[in-house]
Length: 580
Image (cartoon, rainbow, N blue to C red):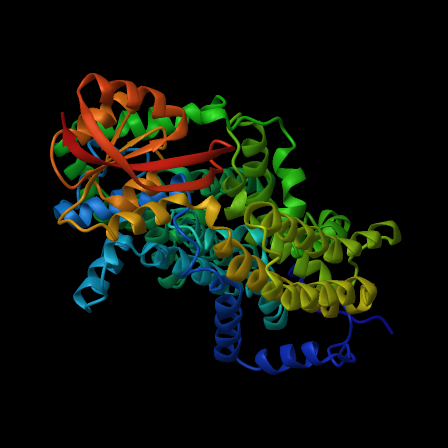
């Protein structure tokens, strides 16, 4: 007898509901947490913390974007000016103020609670990103509930939580994890409105909660990263309008009230910054930052196909399953649920592939759609054709490659094999191997769960142990520590040849970024001053010091590697002994 189901949603299982559970303890755990929404949310929260917290507190500031964001926030806190955005004396108008306000609130709270030196603890500035990443995982679960079963929604949340790209962004004090939260909230609310229209539900009294979430998320996204969030929404709406030959469902989003609410949320700061800086913010943010990305900006150009190639790493461990699900997703493309998710995914992906400037995190807001589409195919048990099943090996390839890379890198940089990480690396390899060997179409979720556990052990090894041990990659904290140990009050510094934002963040906003000659002049202007001179600038420093009769000695020397520029560095810390 053929089983039939009333609901046509993409992701609805096509086998009897009393199917045999794929025997595995991990699958049994999934059954337990799928018993209620509260259990599911707590489970995803716990998994998110396990995946995101390793290294969160002890990885030093990362150059350059994270350190720039943190330093701009630090200056807000120092100055008490929460309207203007600056890096030292230069305006920083590439992004709106949202993330700076969030980071400032965390730092101010920590200071009020008595945490010493809160302003230079980079993990405080990362807390909004952690909240954004975990929130995005929970909202992926919530969004997926409109398309798949509760069990499937949990799997979609796990795929997002364990993805390599979100794991990176959760540990960086930037906008992208929090932007992801706003995008998923907006797209999840819009999905419910669209699907209710497709099902012919009563248009007179739709819930107010969906439009409220949609317009609030839209406002949050605009305050975080300007109009970028509109790209995802507008392209999705336009694609659906073309496919359905109608967009009347948009009235269910209550656009008049929604636009008024959006303006109430976003206009005050935009008016304030216009009052302060005129049109400089808008020309810098929209003209020099956003529109400039259509050309290869800051040497980040790449050909079309870049994101597709990178996807197999950045979306691991979900990437292997997504590849096997692709044929099933394409066959279901005319179903309302799949159509919505593909409209969310494909037009924006094509735009990003065509734009010249490419950075891995640009496509992060599209990953929840891929996760839900993948789970939809998984629930139907029509994941792959036989030749695609070979992709299951990818669950082992990534932890194997990453393990070799981090161990070799640690030995090359520190001459230490980081033995502490090896048990976790071994566990990651074992679970990755299980995910590969145990894969079958009928038990794909068992392999996925093993791959998620592999990702957890890999996160502990790479982020929690190996990266913090690579001190040569992070010279700024070593320099700051050396300056704190000097015997004088209020040391001031000038840097020549090493101008990374992390140095300003760690050593103070007043740190002068100059050349070798300028560092010598700075050193001769008073006591308790230090010149941080990279070896390539030492000749000009010495020549100027001789010319002005400056006597100095080397207080310390720090060797490291500037990964932003891809070269080894050696920084001498010079201290003045006076002039002749």
